Image (cartoon, rainbow, N blue to C red; front, side, top):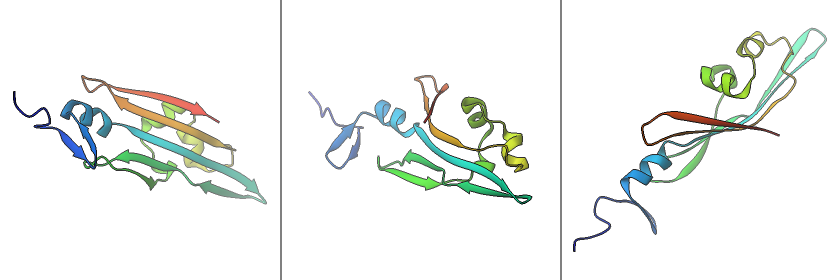
Length: 116
């Protein structure tokens, strides 16, 4: 009958088929907390954003990121102007939410932006 676990990704007690592991590994979760405040001619930036991803072992981890260096698709998906972030003129009062990106069985990306 063969071993049903042969060729599967094993994570602790969790066993995933390679196809499922590929989906899991393709998930990106952005937790965006970014703001600009202008006072006395100076713009103060707050950026506590982070990227959550699964590694090859199936462990999920958060990594700090800078939204000034975010990929173009993040701006399009969230509706925030990249120029406003790069110019630092205090026009981005609060950019906060979760952005989930995943890939389908053909590798095509999809995104979901949740503002809070």
